Image 1: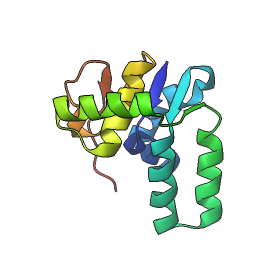
Image 2: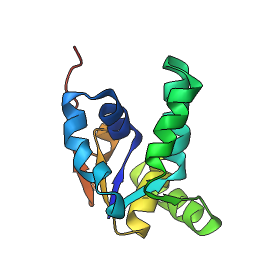
Image 3: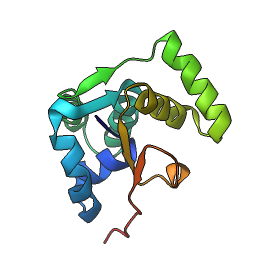
Image 4: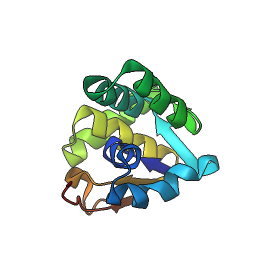
Length: 127
């Protein structure tokens, strides 16, 4: 199982050089887990820069994977990992979802660098 955090989705949707690296887990739809918080982040990100239609198209693509909603059990797990690893709310939810589903978390977010169960890809400068 794979989870791609928002930074990876942004690179993939932009078609950047790092986006190619995130394409592998994103295109393996049968192995793709999508925390609902990433839908919030991606929709908002695209809405701020493009159109609502483009944001909806991105969400439709994300929805091809297994969408995981935040329930009370996952919320408590997110609070615990957030506290333990000093993560933001969204990062806590994403990481807790990855742990719960035994998924590899793909990211270029330095907050996850060197954490167990994470495939960290360093950011490359955009041209």
